[in-house]
Each structure stands twice: as structure tokens, then as C-alpha cells.
Image 1 (cartoon, helix red, strand yellow):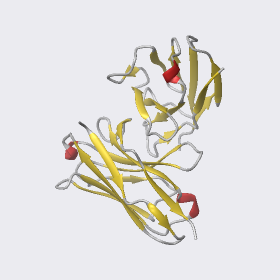
Image 2 (tube, chains in turn red, orange; image 1 turned 90 degrees about the vertical axis):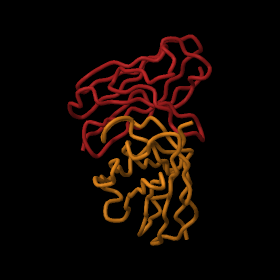
Image 3 (cartoon, chains in turn red, cyan; image 1 turned 30 degrees about the vertical axis):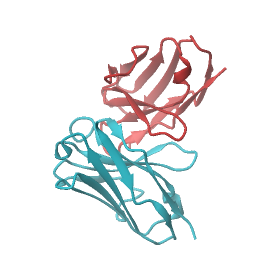
Image 4 (cartoon, helix red, strand yellow; image 1 turned 180 degrees about the vertical axis):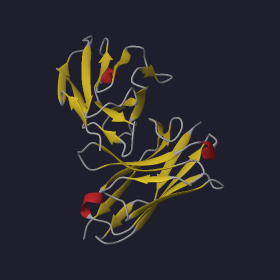
Amino acid sequence: DIQMTQSPSTLSASVGDRVTITCRASQNIINLLAWYQQKPGKAPKFLIYKASSLQSGVPSRFSGSGSGTEFTLTISSLQPDDFATYYCQQYFSYPIVFGQGTRLEIK
Amino acid sequence: EVQLLESGGGLVQPGGSLRLSCAASGFTFSSYAMSWVRQAPGKGLEWVSDVGGSGDRTFYAESVKGRFTISRDNSKNTLYLQMNSLRGEDTAVYYCARVFRGLKDGFDIWGQGTVVTVSS
């Protein structure tokens, strides 16, 4: 099975900061990676697919990059609504696997 | 409006069974693969199972293989998850989700989740 490892596990930042979350796959997944945002008590929200394609309706301050085994999610200027937990997910092969999550908290 | 609405969760004893349902609306249900994803209390997301649009192809996480069965009724726009031989580690919020495109992809639409608690 492919393992997905996110770093950091927790990230403290301020409104207006630029932040980057990293996701590493244990083997080459080409660009078959998605990113989600989840707030407490809510379902995840689909942000990015194919590593760098922004889902319709997602603000342009979110961006994704990477290929192969290393991927990043960047938020260019943090807004109050962005404080949440973020997950990556590989869909290159079954079983589909999520990263363990990165909690983005207010500094 | 595109919507998924889960039901069927509850408290069940270890070894018991439960069937979850997910009612879809606002899109052509049969054109999309569907999935179940769960989240144990305070934990991350765990993929459980996928089913193709026609219901002929199914995939399972190793942790549920042989105990859970995914199915769908396209005439009723409903996805199901039959859960047997339930264990404490199956306690979680269960989400149904629409697969974005094709069979393997991200999940673009999610339900609100239904809570399953396995405890004596």
C-alpha cells in the first residue's frame, strides 16, 4: 500500500501569512493527489485535484504543486476562514489513502 | 442542488450489524462512482469502500474486507453500506462521497455524515 505522510502535523500562523503544507508519497503517484479542508464537526471540502487543479469555487489563494512523491499545498495569504485541518489523498491505486492531516491554527 | 444525505447510523453491540444509506439528489447518480469514508473520533480520514457507477466494480479497505458490503440502487439514487461483524474500531462518523471523475479520483461532494458507535 502507498503511505502518505504530511508535514507538519500542526502549523501555527497569523492572518496574512503565506503557509505551505507538504505531503509525501511512499512511491510515485504521478500527480494523482487531492487536497481537502475540514473544519470541526463538518465534512471535508474538496480543494484541489490532480495535484494542482483548483476545484471550482475554491479561492485562488489556495494552490497545489508537485509530482511523483512530493507535493505541496500553499495558501498565499491566510484568511480567518482558513484555520482548519488539511488532508492530502492519493488516488493512484487502491487502497485510497489519506495523509494524517495538518492542523492549521491561529498563532 | 447537489446533495448527499446519509442515514442509518446508531449504537450497535460488538458483533452486530448495521446498514447505512446515502440518498443522492441533484445529479445523475448512475454516472458517478461513489465511496464511503470514515473518521474515528479525534482521528483522520480513512477510505472504506468504492463502487462503480453501475455497481459492478467494488473495492474495499483491508480493515473492512469480508465484513462490509457496498452496493447501490440507481433506480432509487441510493448508496448503501452493509456492515457486519462490527468491532469497536469501526466506531466513526461515516461519510458518503461522490467520486469526482472516473472510478479513482478525489471526492468532490460529501454528505454530512452519520455516526456509528460500536459498544456494549
